[in-house]
Image (tube, rainbow, N blue to C red; front, side, top):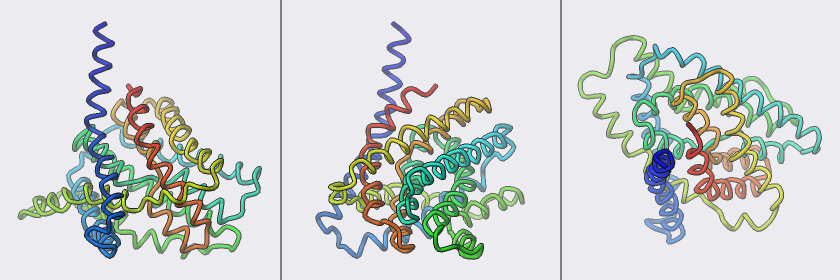
Length: 311
């Protein structure tokens, strides 16, 4: 009886932590639909977040992170192992289904990419600063790896140079922020002279604005076709990927918090920016828009259910 009550309290606390995040996504969707403040606002807000506010969050999290955590090497191994296994499975599926690069690129991004804004907001709500530190360290590995695999999958039939793969990564503000924060941490300089407070103010604005932008990018009109493809990709991302992450974490005996953060990031819906990359590289952008929208909507149900069963 007592265990049952504790489980109910845990689920309630989880819902209380997550529902404001999805409320912001819904708010962003309706603000964009009502053209408030105007259509030009949202692309500018996304750029501000991507190039300034969000990097400030990652930089400050890593600049003060306890990098001597003995679980970090195993967490890094778990991230790369899970991504590698998922990528091999996608390659097998591509061979079996005969997908062209444009379609394979959309499926790959639907399975491997993740909504960073939602992930960090959820981690911060559930685990506080300790969780954000782990998430920032994971992002330093996951962002460049997933970007390389996304570009390669979209251009596999046309051929791709090493430069075209690595240049976007070298210019990515999120990766640069992670590297900069880690270097400051290792140097022992810290964040003097009020810089920590400045970065904290910028970081505080990043997650709510990011979630509003996620909602603004939703395209429900793209859900009318490709129902089997949308459903299978969503099941792969929201169900199979977190199970894979949990199995890898269990095999490597990760601690509870590291396991939860890893599984959460592998259970997130795909990133809205996947649509932009797909369109730029000639992929199936309509399918990509439908995947993004359906996964984001379903995540409002799948994330609480998944996190409720984690230890």
